[in-house]
Amino acid sequence: MAGGNPEKLLRIPDLTGFDKTEVIIPRSSRTVYDHAIRNIGVKIIMVDTAEELAAALNARTAMIYLSAGGQLRSCGSPSFSFLSRCLPAPACPSSRAQ
Image (cartoon, rainbow, N blue to C red; front, side, top):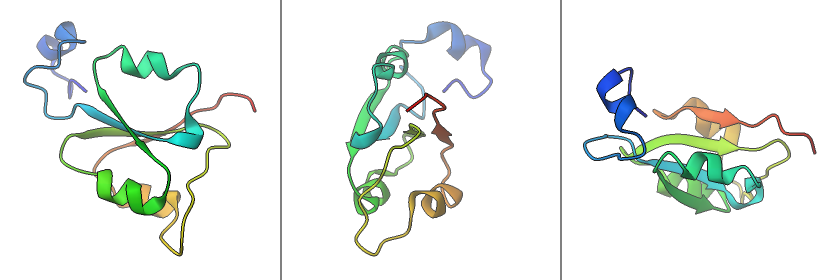
């Protein structure tokens, strides 16, 4: 989020002036821990399909959060793993137990 900038780091959750302020979460990856992501001030973008994920990606995307066992419904589209390799944003898989 802060891109290594200590001044920005101290301002979180005030994201004024930050370039990346959105986190994409597949609806199937919602957990009780979502608040930990939301608490840093980002806007959470919910998606259900690989198509929606691709459409949601933009210059403001800070991260894609995918919990263990989370699935994207795909209709012949690239998989999440394929899309995440092509992204400018990191994909953050959760290791929560299922």
